[in-house]
Length: 94
Image (cartoon, rainbow, N blue to C red; front, side, top):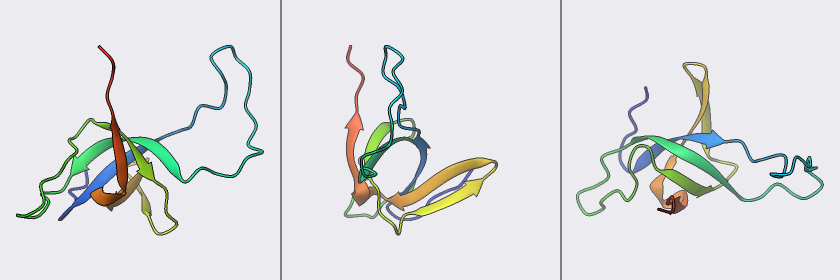
């Protein structure tokens, strides 16, 4: 697995749902959204004055930038990005 440095995280992107719960297929006639969802696989140590807000296993919403680093590592397409690009943690309702 990758070990991110500084305030970087490794995210496994989650494919956007392409059909509704009733089985209707969605087309991609709209523009690509500037956000996506993923699972945090690894978290860097942060900085002494900056505590990391996410943990391994968190499901997150992050900003999609053209300069995000996407790599194929051990057969998986992964994203390496700065934690500042993460917009929210998706918490499961209890």
